[in-house]
Length: 341
Image 1 (cartoon, rainbow, N blue to C red):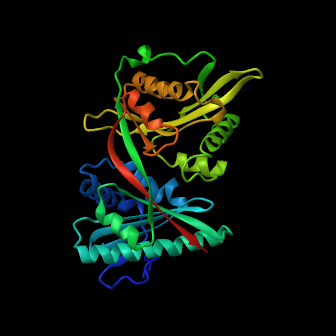
Image 2 (tube, rainbow, N blue to C red):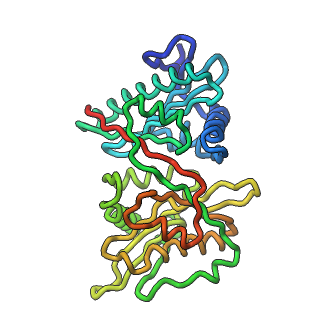
Image 3 (cartoon, one colour):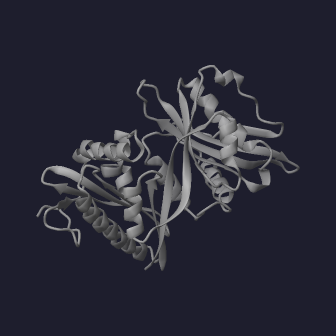
């Protein structure tokens, strides 16, 4: 047995299992693309992101296993130690696999994900953790496996996209009076000023306190996770301020990234995070931040801006996005399970 081999309890001898390496990236990319095609009718896998998850920055906080049937890759388990008290469990199974085989592999991998999550939680000294997984809204197969593994469907998300016109950079309305948006400051070497990064983190944490499934993510965890994305750029972070009697105060923040080229070979932008502090809501801060991302995308020659929004958002964010030209491409679901350690 090589150092890469790993045992998955309960899996029959037909399957071989091992840890992934960088050389597995093409096969895993094909597996994920096939899963997406079957689940939602299209695929948009970023090979760089897959490689980073398997063997780059993204691998540092993950426990991963590949399942093979002979030379054929049939499944991938990723257990991500995202933050204290939250573990992401992702199980991807080849849609061409027979139903009985798929159920065996998926069930065994979800059980292995639970064991890894217990290990991670105990190493952190926790008493409980949240298992966080998901499915496409039309993927009844994945949803069945999640239910069988003890997960509950907790939320639906709209995956939205907006086309960008090259001339929009000059036509977008300016922020309202008293609202200003600026990039996170950077040093001469291009690295960001730590104080601004900490302000972005604090504003986003405070903005999401009253949102669904809010949880505390430490500053190092937040920055490290965003840097794992191959589309991450420091010049895609912005801060918004509002004028008050005490002077300008932080009011909102947006973090975006680069989307890989589409079928036409053109890149896009993606809104990873946007948050407006409660004290500044109703002053047009979110619209100003979104306009900044659209204008930046237009200036860079990109053709779209994507984002995700809670379908049941108490802030009515989906209405704002729709009014600014976003349309829903597909829906995804969050499935959660509380795990006592």
